[in-house]
Length: 153
Image 1 (cartoon, rainbow, N blue to C red):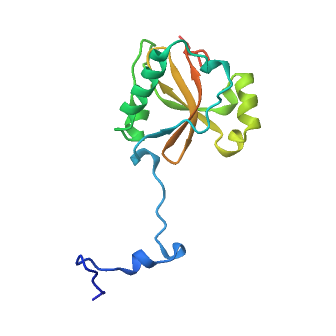
Image 2 (image 1 turned 120 degrees about the vertical axis):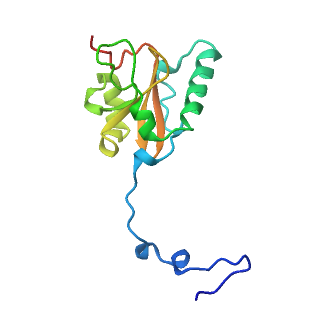
Image 3 (image 1 turned 135 degrees about the vertical axis):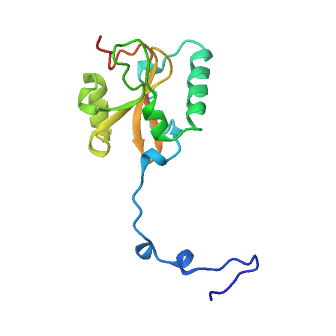
């Protein structure tokens, strides 16, 4: 039997194992809880010149509601008025970004590191566009009128 600490739990070798000795467990985005960050935000871009706090409050409230969900749940949300009702939140190739956004995406190294952006629906027309690293959605741009990736009707 292993040694027991004061609280009666075994101090197993797993806790003291070197990183190379740990089992190789693949990361699964779908099972992870959604987290978000403004660390990579493109502050100087015109898309962030917002009118009033209502927009910011709406964005923050929506992001907070996503915090209770897994990535699978977020990627599975669907609806809207478009025929076929595709998913509301989804990955999109960085090569499909409008030219001015694609230029920044490449210059910052995001194309090399991520290749795709994630479009997160805030409401019928508003989207946040960012990159996903592990379970964290790093917000880059605010698309107020769904104009970066317009819906094809």
